[in-house]
Length: 587
Image 1: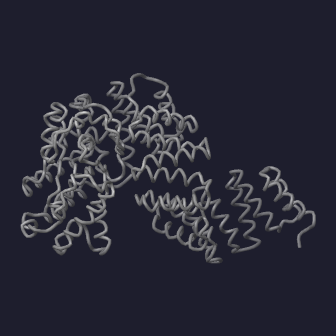
Image 2: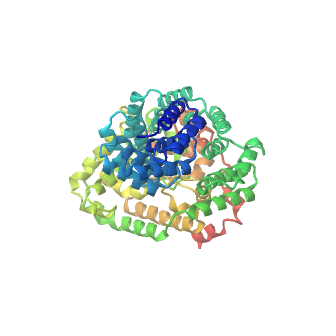
Image 3: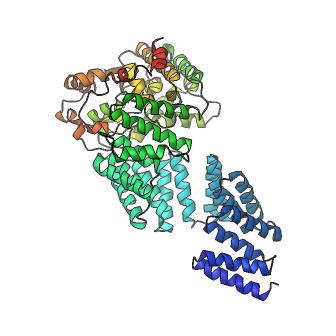
């Protein structure tokens, strides 16, 4: 039994803690412990107060003292795990959570917290399993549903993410993170009006939630409301002055005409030592864009080179990986492959694939076509790649592209049907639906096999301008070739060689469209483009920048403007710094 005065002080600590009078609660718990050194509950609750006060190292010590008195107690193990996880000590935290679960397999919070630690370490599938275990035990854990939604977003499983966010909101109608996450999911799905409503609800619940202003800004940017988007980015930065992503979005959407307060703020933030490398990379790319807008090209390239240097140092990559893939594609999709499969595939003519290297003009061409009443622009779709990945998932030995040769001929028709069913989610009635995933140039042979009547528009661009645009922009994961000039030039040549292979192997299947010719002769090139697509002339295709549609790419701001020639031969401004790229492309 504990000393009566110790118990009295402990109970007072609990009341004060409930009232969020944390410093007083801390003193009360410490007084109880001073009277009774073995007061395990006081040690444990002191740990809870210290967590709430942000003193995580001290909290860990309090929990450890409690565990010495009461070894293997699941709640104490779980609480120690939380304190360690908040300190970034995820491996230690996982040991605690697993120990708690060993003691109590039905401890839902421990399963959920284990998921959080696993996610921090990139052990995504294990994290998902932990979250689902927690939900199975306790179906009313709103935080767990929300966290599961977030991890599914990271895996691009947007539909499932939205379902989990909605479940979290159903359980807890005031769940701020779930509303914001749902906004992100709906925005990714192209359901912009619903996304905007979800962001506004987040802001209603917490007017100081900076991420909601940023997400709302992105949604409005996708919708073409750039002025309103910029105002929202500034609001997010006002709330959180170090919000790097908001600065990146601001820089992308704004045309800088002078050295203003936005630039000063970005440079001040960039100079701070506490920035992580990832933050420094994003901000350096943004400052590169700022100084290019201002016509200070040498300074712009200094920032760009620093950004790409840091990014390239963050992962292992060899151009030989790309060389092997490109070689295997040509070996698999041979003339014999197609001659043996003259009648395979689905005859549907709905898809128009717009492809080429990133930053080659694919967004512009999709915007032009999507301005036609018979065309719906679906944006960059993962559907084709998902079909391939699902085929690989059925047999771990399957690797693209080699296994394609072993598929039964009848399966090509089924794969074509599945692809059509997926893109029809974007429109049931449109005559044509565009898919502008640039790297589908790797899958032209697969497209021909499953959809022989599809149309393919290949954007070509001056190699130096194209590579410069890739190099100076922050691209999402999957573009590992883009951060070193030599590797970028080598990859670009592999791409050129593959496109020449496709033209020779599949004559008349690909329509080449020059970005420079489109910029120089808009009406003439658009007429030819519409003729290739079997579309009647429509003046709206010349006024594409007035078309109100969602555009979710790095070029969403550019396609809101009439065609401009600023970026043609832009590489000449950087010729001195681009020598490694010139040598890699031209030898």
